[in-house]
Length: 285
Image (cartoon, rainbow, N blue to C red):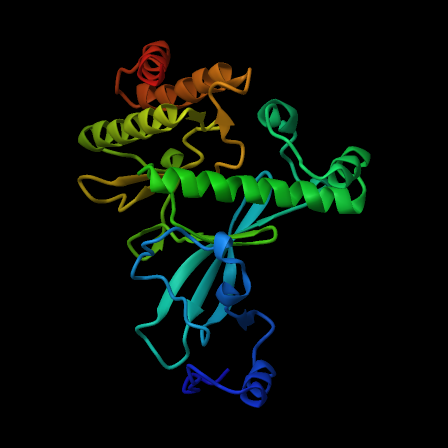
């Protein structure tokens, strides 16, 4: 697409179709207007978010390959309007044939699938059933992110859900994607700041009656990693479990505590997993 192209904010069908033909294979019109209102992020929406119907989504490449989904960098921008441009993380779930996440049973205890046809298809592992399962995980993460974000837990702003694709706030550090916690080498002062943040986030989650279930230095992002007070952001929450309804919840919480405290202890900050677990459970109950 030529850089100097201008797209009107409003256009008739003839203009729309003519412009659609000009899109590259790595582009599409913004899907914001095509998803249901319940699949758009909570209000008030952040000022950086582009919601214009004239915006174009451009895939900028793969950010991360995960156990159950791949994350891509996406630019949503209105051509010719520099003020309307933002970067998003597009998390796209794979069906069960292409996923590496095999612990579904323990996490989904207490969850229900309303549609009996979907339940049978999932049990038979048909193509349709695998697609349903992928959609359930995407929808579960969408609900979890909205709930956590509105409660003040440091998670990326959930922009929208479209089938098995989640669009999220792109968390950066300087001009690059924010590193994961296991990739950073914080100073002693930064180490204390980061542990305080993850501890407070876990307090907020247990107060809500939920457990991350897979928390580790691999799904904690460090925004502004070079600042004296870097900002911790929790990602990957599709397996969020209910602290009361799920019989495995306390076991998952203890593992989260061990994963987190183990990393900080290895870097010189003396923190104890059992003490953190007891503190969190006392706070929750």
